Each structure stands twice: as C-alpha cells, then as structure tokens.
Amino acid sequence: MLYDDIDDLVSYYYGLIKVGMEAHIPKRQINKRKKDKPWMTGFIRHLLMLRNKLNGKFSKTLRLEDKIERNRMRALCKKEIRYAKARYRASQTAQLADPNIGVKKYWSIMKDIYGSKIKSSIPTLIDNNITYSTDLEKANLFVDLFSDQCSLEPPASDYSLPNVEYLTDERLHSVVFEVNEVLKLLKGLDISKATGPDGIGNRLLKECADSLAIPLTDIYIKSMNDMIFPTEWKMSHISPVYKKSFRHDKVNYRPVSLLACMSKPMERIVYNVMDNFFKSLGLLNARNSKKKIVPSINSYTCVIISIKALIMLRMSAWCSLTFPKHLTKCITLPCYIN
Image (cartoon, rainbow, N blue to C red):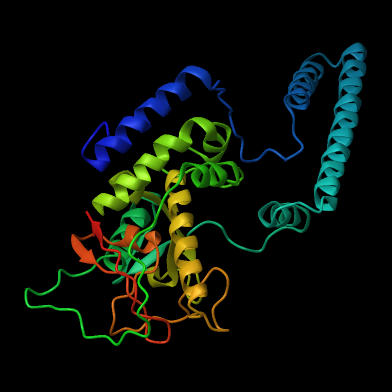
C-alpha cells in the first residue's frame, strides 16, 4: 500500500486522475446566455447581429438599397429561426419516442414543452424579523440551519448501548470488495448524473473503468479495514429544496446533497451485501421495498444502514450497524467517522 492514511491514499489517486484530465480532456469555454432560446445557434445569433447592423444603417441613410438588404436579412433570419425550431421540436419528439429515455430527461423535455409553474429561485428569507435578500446571506443562513440538523452531540462519558435481543445467531462481520465487481459497477454508471464537488464525474469513471477498478478497490478495502471513510468523500454540494408552506421561512426547505461519484460503487457493494444477507435469513417483510431496507427507525436504538448515513455525521465516534427489532441485531461492522 502506498500510504498508511486513507485520506493520503485518496488524495494521491485524485492527483493522478486530475493530472490526466488536464492533459487529455479538451476544454472549451461556453458563454451561457440566460435569455437564449433552446433552439438558438451561433449561426442564427450571427445573422441577428447582421440584421440589427443593417437596420441601423438603413435608419441613418434611408436609402432604397439599404432597405432591400435589410429586408433580405430579415427574411433570412426568420427562415433560419423557423428551421431551427422545427429541428429542435423534431429532436424532442424523437427523444420522447425513445423507449429507453430516462425519467430525468423525460420531465426536462415535458417542462420545456408545457412550461413549469415551479419557482426555482429562493425568495427573500425572514428569520427572527431579519430579512436575508442576497445570495450570500441566504447561503449562510442555510449553512447554519443544515449544519445544526446534521450534527450529533458527543455522547456522555458513561454512555453505553442498550441491551438488545438478537433474533438470529447469524452475523455479518465483513464486506468483501472484488475488482471484477467494482469494474462492473463502474461500467454501469449513469453518465447523466451530476458531478460531485471533486470534479470527477461518472463519464470519466465509466470510460476509464478498466484503469480505475484496481485502485478504487484498494481504496474501498483500506477504508473498510481501517474503518475510516475518506474525508474527500464526505464533502458535498448542498442545495436547499422547497418543501411546503411559507416560502420565506428557512425551515420549509430541505437539503439535497450531491456527493462524490467515486464513493457510489462502494455504497452499492455494501448495500448489496446487506440486502443479500437479510434476504437469505428471511428478515425482509412486505413493507420493505427494493431500495429501502428499514421502513422505520427506532428512536431508542442508533440505526445506521448505509455509508450514506455515515457521511452525514460530523463527529468522532464508534458506530455499530444495528437494526430495529423487527429485522435483526446482527450487524457488527464498526466504522470510524472522522
């Protein structure tokens, strides 16, 4: 192993990947104009600029030949805009007719066609009779709110876990990470998903899966053996999403975190191992869906069911993976949260 510390190991591989990105991935600067229509192209924008220029020239000279040239450019602009709209709508129709279209893309097209009544911007917030109108003020207000919600108080010195009744003698003591399984998950990543704060997206992980499978497997194994989740993967981009009621009250927003893509295969492997373990013992009931292992959490018992739950913690503690009584108390995977 190159490094004894998991964070140093992750930083080393991150450095190698980003050096490769800088050397081999071409970059292009795109100026995004908020008022542009989705069918707008650079050619049409150029024609509109020429039209405006000829219109200004005719306004000054009032000559017949300038008027004819302006009208010709007007007709050409209208023709190109009409063709661009037709091409754009035809593209939308073809995408909607595709049986493999994703849910995200489908609703994106539908909102573009029919419009959306959802207000994407956050209005002025009011807290303790103080108004927060600028983006920075709103961001700081949400940071304080969400950090309080995602923090745990340190346990008391005399704290001990409650006695629990085991429903089975079987135990899940470890999770095995294999290169072939990691490679399969990397090649199956959805490239339409957004990139996390580390700047490494699913497209890069999928295209370079053969080269990244072994180092990522090493990181997953070391993370599990050391019982430490990498600090880099705890970072996230958080967006406040409106829930209901008064839009100017901060408590009516919930945080949605965008995490690093490199941690997703590890989460999936842990989930698959736990899911297979429960199914083999017949511990899942009808209330459990495919993606939800525990339907409810017993407030008396500390329940952590996935790596995602570990990411949300911001304290140093030993956490044993335990479950409510209707499932089992059979998981003994300690994870140290730095």
